[in-house]
Image (tube, rainbow, N blue to C red):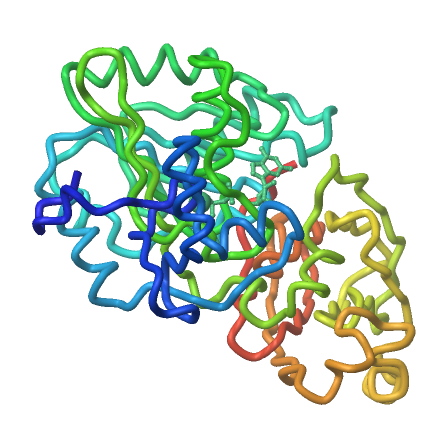
Length: 374
Ligand SMILES: Nc1nc2c(ncn2[C@@H]2O[C@H](COP(=O)(O)OP(=O)(O)OP(=O)(O)O)[C@@H](O)[C@H]2O)c(=O)[nH]1
Ligand SMILES: [Mg+2]
């Protein structure tokens, strides 16, 4: 367990936090009755995990930066294989600045998760190449790249083989930005090895896992789940849990093609906006959650349209949250090649060459262009 004399401390098996019975607002709070019962059954969950698991309710506790830094330093000093999980639907939002700094000399295995969200028609080897290329652009030199779906149990066997190949007498640390599916992946591994289902708490909210969770491997080493790194540009941080439910895709994305003329606008719910500024009439392909309402207007009317319909026709945000929703900021791009215009955490629009467009996203969320994935 941890080095700081916490060997005896009881931990929640759902989120890793140290169990305490005094402070109902604090991390790891567990009522005495639940503590006794948990000790008996050997399945001890804190109150926050209990609520998440049974009612899908999130309690807003979070790690302090100090706790988090301590954990990162442990990873740097460990002799470990780093399994770095990214959400391939939100690749840019999954990048951890300075990853190399805190993993030290440990090798990195890159895992592209949520493969099930991308269209079946996209050939997987091509997708794998794309991920490798994007990783290199971000300065990453992974020893290998594997595409999986933790949720659908796609290619988990293959991943386990690859982990065994590179692990060589080491612990395995699963790291990544919050919400990319680290705990879901580990649950899938536990299920395969022991048959136990859903051991670790997972949720669609960021910040689910709160401390490291160690799962013993056959040879005395451990597989470690870690809390996600908060990437402030993630869309998840400007949306409420209800709104997040509307924009976070759960199923295979069905791309939608729009034939656009210059000076037309697409609203992506009320959370983002795409203006086609200059270029010929062309097809643009939108990759967003199938339930996100998309509306087309004339560019000239777009501002008025937004004011009038935000929270009603254009949701999320929902009407109640409309007042608190950050303003949209505009980024202009001139594209010489076919590219993806990315609205971080929401999706992207594939735009043909020789066009000028603007992407609008809530203040604080990233918008960027990248080589087209598809
Ligand atoms: N479609 C899809 N969703 C997934 C997959 N893996 C995880 N998810 C979903 O992603 C959300 C986050 O999953 P978690 O496993 O809690 O993510 P995490 O990385 O452990 O998050 P933190 O503990 O906050 O760092 C949940 O809603 C999962 O159901 C996947 O392969 N495909
Ligand atoms: Mg987790």
